[in-house]
Image 1 (cartoon, helix red, strand yellow):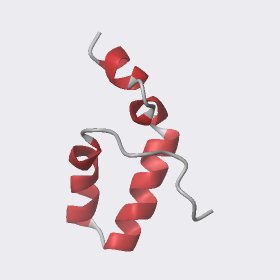
Image 2 (image 1 turned 120 degrees about the vertical axis):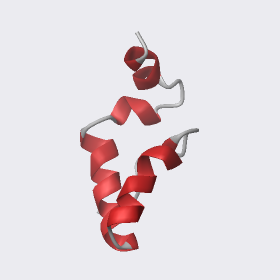
Image 3 (image 1 turned 90 degrees about the horizontal axis):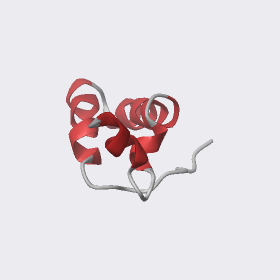
Image 4 (image 1 turned 135 degrees about the vertical axis):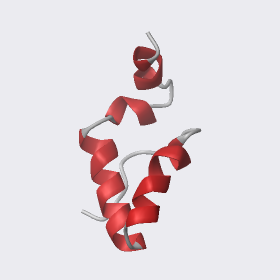
Length: 56
């Protein structure tokens, strides 16, 4: 699947930076996409539910 099912929210660049530092652009995109999709999908929701849960 090549389509991205999430949109940008503020702060995603902070999570993406280590992937881009350690991997090629293609590997970083694939790994980061899977990280967001499977490990923290609530982080990228428009209302930032994951962020609010994380700071409680």
